[in-house]
Image (cartoon, rainbow, N blue to C red; front, top):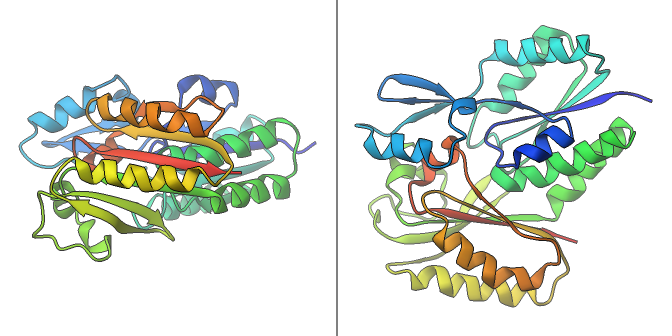
Length: 279
């Protein structure tokens, strides 16, 4: 039986107990706040990064893991007995992590299959967890890759932001099709689809989010849902409202988690994401 290890990056939002249970390796991205560089590993305490961002003079700058860190990690996993490695990463349009991972694998000379998840956060978690379960149960490399592709094709990721300011400052607004950077103080719901962010609802008040939620629940009524996940930047208040509204459409408990520093930097405070894995 081939020993397959699953690797991902810290743009994933995932319960620590799942990482431990499934023996997933998470390589940390970094973020620079007012000249100080922090590893995502040191920003896992609830609200810690948000506090840093609130008090920073400038928008924090996120950075992909160094190529050398990938190389060292892959070499270590091979020494520990990994025969094949599958690395699942944040979409290439939001980060250069995928390419850094490929370069690290080449330097290490390891048998690594690098996968662009097309997503991030808990949308990427769906793929990582499913792949790790297949690997743990003795599945082949093809089994793992087929599972990732199947989950990817059945996943939707929606993100709501209360301001476009962070997306503009972080240079991501150019990748948000159909939005004007001058419209900073509007609430927008976007779908991350085919590596791009597409606005699907926008308006001035909180009713924008509720109107979108109505359209989402109308769709869910007619679909079979495997799981739903909710992430947030700031407080969990609205995320919990979303959970209450959406739990009725899925048997599995909805996870509500604070997203990491990479996503919070680009979305700003008050953002949320709803990720749906359809059957």
